[in-house]
Length: 283
Length: 322
Image (cartoon, rainbow over all chains, first blue to last red):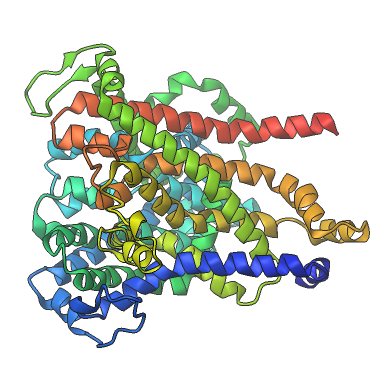
């Protein structure tokens, strides 16, 4: 396919030039801020606003990272909190979503169609619509200001069920029926046959959920009062108001918050793209 | 749980149909137990953290309440909505939201489409480009917000750049001046989102069979004709989808604004989502916050319904033409 497109586009030289220019321009707009962030994070405060912008810091100042990590900003704690809630949310959500996805795709029961259409209808509703009631509910349950409450609240997502159901549905019924003939129960089928076949969708969900929970700002902002519970995003915005004028420090903190995502992204780019398009195509 | 029992009364027809169509895998008692084990956690959490909150939000929207347990909820009818629409802060927030949606739609999909088409053709370093455009979509908006906050600071890079190229008169506190604060936020929102739409459109482009292009080539179509006569019409449903996703996604934006301006200066960059936060968690005005939430709900449900119906409508129309 690529080759054919190549010949189709070859004759237009001007188009190619324009295309390259547009690309280059967008490239700069996309890339500059990120490069600026990284280079600033290694600068001394006095070099931050030198002009023209020095992309390579005149003096490499690793101390910013040391300061952010070991200073009085609780960064290791925020890191640990974020890892804790993120991993918990991802794992619980994988279990709950895959079970529900199997039931919705391969078992027959009352209200199945209704449940699924309810799921679809509520999938796009913004978080903010339900945030006040969720606050009141968690307060009533005594789970406000706790990691447990937060994890419970994010343990289920319509998106997760939806994404996994799409792949469960492609598994042929005959496979399940054969196992049923041999006397396997639905739970056995689910664990021994379905889960191994879902590996790539599970990876997609795990990675996307990791990214989204890691980046979650609004829920921690509202549900965590105790600074000991803060996640990285919340800690960082607080750090920003504390260390307001220390740009280099703040950029070092931002880089620290982004690095795990960058690693995840490099490992799982394909899965992230799959997941985002799968969610979109069905809306 | 209440919710699981609820639906039965409303939709008996759909259920009957299903049972007639496939009754081959009947459920024994053991199966039923397993079925409950597998679905209950999901249904329970769905009910508690999504369905009940939505109903509560609608209920609260018609009451006033200061959020203190024990204090009474007073039914006020549509008063919260009337108050909201009469409140200049809410009017500004809605105007900002509409502005943000309009500009996001104007830029996100068209730019993403250009990038996607170009990336789908022959470009050197394609994987690198894809990476660079897409990577901001997985970064936390708090970090992105902070980053741009510093770039647009009064003594930030943009102003330094402007001064150095002799346009010092344009240098200003981008996020502080009422005239530029909202446009700056809109710009950052566009910047952060392009990669997402590009990936969706790229997936759509990959789905177009190559023989369509071969046929066009044989017929002597040039690149422009190929784009406008083939690529664009085939992609139309996906483009529409992007637009609807963009509307919903932009209506939801919170982190970016909260981190960059906190809704300031003087509430001029508030949007409904940040207003909900302030009304509920700063001013204890739960009724008003819920009313704004319900307005958001109506907007997003309408947009979601559009995703369901617009593609069908277009399919019917183009089928009618042919």
